[in-house]
Image (cartoon, rainbow, N blue to C red; front, side, top):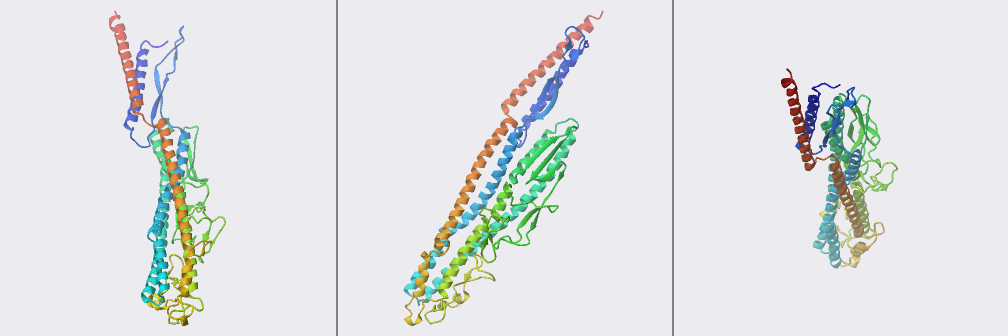
Length: 503
């Protein structure tokens, strides 16, 4: 049968257990504003009963705290992290597509449209007075302004591409840092839990890192528990191990030996595993901020731009997104076609200036190589001598003949690029950008809303609620006081038994 003083043991178990429960509640309350903190609960069980060898069978031994554990929902965690990957991808795309749109809007509002119209307005004036040196100078200056705008746009796109490239490197470095920390946390957690403890706060740190990592790149997470109480966590990217228990792999960024697209900036990084294994950065299954940045930097709409300005499809080497390479290629295509069309008029066999000198090309390559948006300028011959500007096909008709200028004016409404006019072609490029920006913004907003919604669901499970913790505090306080009262009652009973009934 139970000891005469067994009641003290039962009362003490209640004091000890509700002290633990109160401490857990205090821990929750103190972390009520801690980001990433997961609410903890103390699990209480009735202590194992003792056989009394009496008619009533067994005697209860009080209460015990079985564990202090976190309240999380693994399904909501997976759902949240999957959405984070989508959110990260379109957040990156939206941020950079807005920058690209800003440059093109400048062209649309005050840049290309104005300069393009100024060029043709000057030609209209020249048609009226083809021998006027001042008007010739105006035409040449307008042509140079047109070149400057395309030079600036190309440089701006290249600068954005360089910025994206550096951000890709930063994201890869952050992935490596997180992987190192996760492997370390796995070991620390197991060191505690193998002894029967619960490494709740370390698990919170690990979960926060997993949330951050999933926004950068989509990950597959598996955690298995061994017989000795330890767990083994495996984290994979694109089916390849990033973290495997206490071990981790590192990603490296290496400048590409050759340019992927002819207009690409130099030293763009390619991503691979430290051991030399291919990372497959253009995988269709890749998501997250890294995917968004790669699409912006390398997205060529399935067509690689060669040095000759031709775009060609190369299997297994493309991204379908319309990123910087695509818009660089469109600008280059516009300039190459526009310049070639204008130059063809100026260099026709009978093209001459009013003095009978043969016509020369208006546009030339600024540097060595093919003409492109970056590499276009007005012929130095025309900048030096405005009179060399050809205006007629027959100088014998006199200085008033402007037949060549009339042909140039006809080109404004002629379909010269993709069965459309030069102006309409550029407007279509701007429309593409507008659609891409709207799409990125729409998805960014959608996934942002879903992020907040799923997080609210997670917080309803793992978050600390002030009212709930307040009620728990009162509940455990009351239980503790009752156990204390019971201890006091038992003391009086034993005092009666020992001191007053002893003789």
